[in-house]
Image 1 (cartoon, helix red, strand yellow):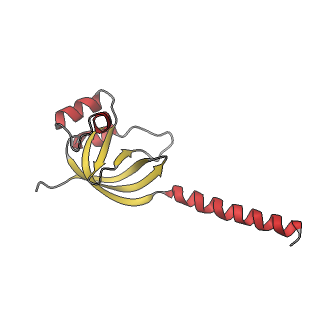
Image 2 (cartoon, rainbow, N blue to C red):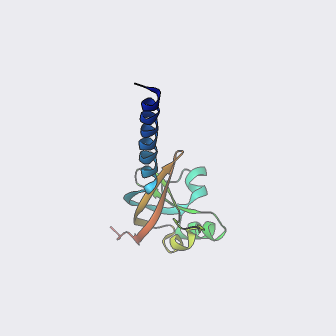
Image 3 (cartoon, rainbow, N blue to C red):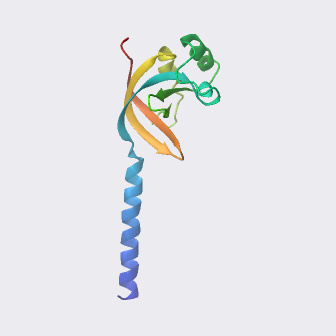
Length: 126
């Protein structure tokens, strides 16, 4: 194989790999069941569910981001897919301390998982 063909093959392989990598950033459709709680409590207190709705609301109003702690232990950071981006506490505040079902697109990077919420609703009481 001559040098020109080898370079052409290498460029083609690199472009194909770049397209695959770029496609992975599109977000995967997902539905998540779990609790909406304050992010600090999810990490520092290791809570499996919020202490109370009032506690989660107070933390959110003080500026702590609300997250969704899924049943499998995954913490989903709600994000916006707009530029400029915006915090998601306003969207989650009505559900603070409650179990929810949220659907949207999930993104993973560096060990963190985020969700662009398209639909969220409180779970029906069992």
